[in-house]
Amino acid sequence: MGRSRYKIYETTHPHFVTCTILHWLPLFTRQESVQIILDCLKFLQEKDNLKLYAYVILENHLHMVISSDDLHKTMQSFKQYTAKQLLELLKKENVTTLLEQLAFYKKAHHQEKSYQVWEEGYQPKLIQDEAMMKIKVDYIHNNPVKRGYVDEDIHWRYSSARDYNGMIGLIEIERLW
Image 1: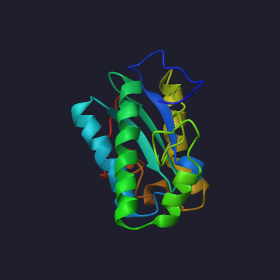
Image 2: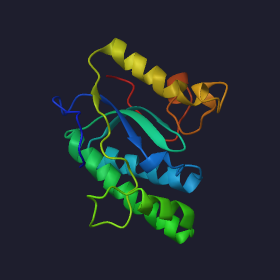
Image 3: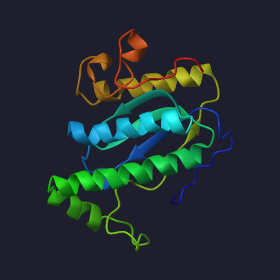
């Protein structure tokens, strides 16, 4: 699953992860591409025991606090499936500029593929205690505010901030850790 200096020692504990689109290309600017991410997360919640504690999806990356029975396997499944679906969507919608960029910036050692969607790795950081969990959840929810996209975190549709403020979000999250 790529070259990473980050190691997972507690495979079933919550981790803060970041997934970035190759070369920070803006792939999540349309509802259809974000829905691929949400659908995959829902599937992994049902079939792979994924626990999603917090998330935010921005135009070119996403942050999550997650756990599963095998985080490395879950993330590998997530990135492989979403890459395939996102490429199919781009081809169907004839988004040639993004497709050309995903081919151009593809890492040289990915010779078996024509495109690369995700940057390698996902930078897992073990959530060691409740204080760290709160810091990471707040960071995730504040990301669109910090970027100036919204004034309040609950206004960002593709985030679990609503769930943490007594509203119903787009995907089920775990509130107990």
